[in-house]
Length: 219
Image (tube, rainbow, N blue to C red):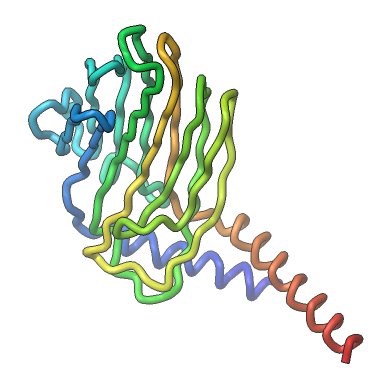
């Protein structure tokens, strides 16, 4: 067990060293699916947060009033934290009655990492309709939650075979609701702590042992 703990800690430390490398500028995008969209680059036009690694935008987008749209990345976030997306949206009564807002924050330069890599997606918020929270690598979803109205929270661990310096990691929050409603969502991508990986590894090892024993009894 001690050897497993050491290996898990080494895994995280190696990734943290890679994560300090230079990365591209983060981008925050907002889209209502009806021809209204905003794309804001870190420290670019529309970004009202002067800090490098943080993008803040608020305003009206179609039938949505966005009180807070915040995307964060490194170097503002300290490893093992990679990306953070926070959205708060309210719909008016002038829409069609079905309103969908897609928000994303993306960045690259977290690699290279040439070994299997674990990433944790965590989410929370309050939905007045339905919502989804997704972690993507190069536009491919590697972890996703689709949820109904109410207070929501949870997490999952996804695995990548490797992570190149050009790989684009992206968080996506999709909120769908009627008129005169408000929803909030916050999701984060990070490298799991060694204790989390240790528990997961122990569970997988136990599963493998049980499966082997069952196979022997069935033979």
